[in-house]
Length: 76
Ligand SMILES: [Zn+2]
Image 1: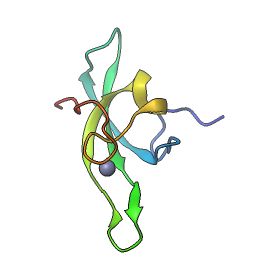
Image 2: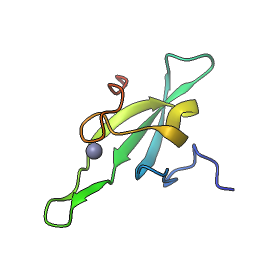
Image 3: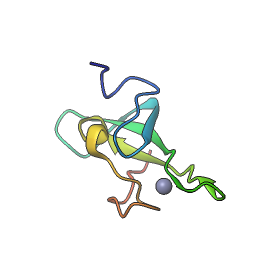
Image 4: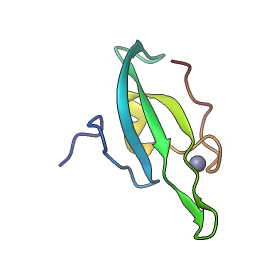
């Protein structure tokens, strides 16, 4: 099982871990990770590419705030 906080981990919503920002998250003992949305809504449009911050504990189920109606990204 790949760890969900590893760089390049991809969750079921095509959200990919870019890096650990090292900044504290807003959940208990969490760090903010930078994620990139690689969801492809249509082949013509390509991937979304949105970059945003998320708590490490949320990565496995995170949805893109721009194209999947996910929660607003954390500032980092
Ligand atoms: Zn997106």
